Length: 535
Ligand code: C2O
Ligand code: CU
Ligand code: CU
Image (cartoon, rainbow, N blue to C red; front, side):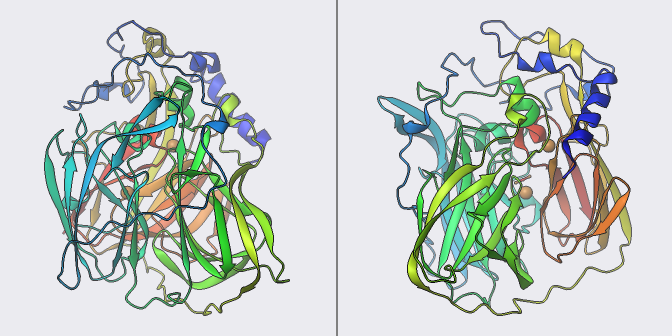
């Protein structure tokens, strides 16, 4: 990680260049004033400051509720980790998975007498777990009972492009559609699903729309291990039960809440009687999770796109950015003694501005109860084979920057959730435009991407590409190139401020894909591009 002095240096540069005035970011929304039309700055993003034909972008009503946070005692802690409810298969046919997912408002009484309006899939927070196997045929009917358009994006699942819930393929309020696709060989992994409508992904995910999607390999070398799913999400709850909309600081840094939930539960208890296989999802909008198990060593067995070639033993922490997933193996302690340890998120400086980015104390996510004399199960030393992708036939370059146009910001007193003007997150100097193709790729070809984070605020960005996964090959920071030690399938990779990451990938379907920062506020403010995969 860049040390704090280099982060400060990057920040000073941004301020000196007139791009950043920290004080302006602290302003909360002013109520009751209509947002004036945005001024046109001379920055490269401003020419795209129109509506992109979106009908729901301005639909967010003025927020009149409380912004004061509900105290941590609002949610009960210490309860057994609830399992993720499974989405039931309604098909009798072998190899077919059919089900329905309905996105709808869902009321939960967290604050007594003041129910919270969440948005949920099938009334479940998080959404129900889809648990399927490579080779299965998926047929899901999506029913959109929200008051605005939505999609379901199958994050990490290599679906055909027209089944992937892209922003242009929205399902209007009150309408439904089918998503149908075959899970090809090699699609196993710890995936997930969430909405992806233009400029509204963050707004829909933070209210509860996200769920887990496990694709199992045909032959699973870890099938003998008991499993535990940890789907981690973030919740900001006001003392009146409202989920308040974003502040300017949220738009800048990405939104974090006072609660981190696992399978919807606050600081649950996880019982470990013997060796277990844990799948962990970071489904937070912006929160980085530097996970530790009270210093106990654990084994890394898989990443976003499934198992590693061989397990990596002896880790005591790992960094999971928003949208990343891992599989780890947790063994009972060697001495056979019962003990309770804390699953923690250790402090991690991901840059940005303001008090929210100051080093935080470690945060307890769960308590893990190891039983006495827990049974240790053997883990094979070979999990699968991963072939390194070969010589690239094309190269793509992406630069990540952000820009603040102070004149526009000052002229915009607040405005609805999706219209924070004057703040731009850019890829190759441009905001996302649904109609513009940013990168052309060839189907089934090895192509190398080079993504550089030039954040003037010293901010990390987790970079994600839709479709097929990639292999990170190298990182470059302060002139030093480091080959990636781990050969693994990923679809999201952290890029530190000032860092360049190179990865190779093969897209196996033709059609339109997105690539973007998976801090959802950055994505919604434009840090996304279109990839067209051609035959
Ligand atoms: Cu979780 Cu565009 O992705
Ligand atoms: Cu995705
Ligand atoms: Cu970002």
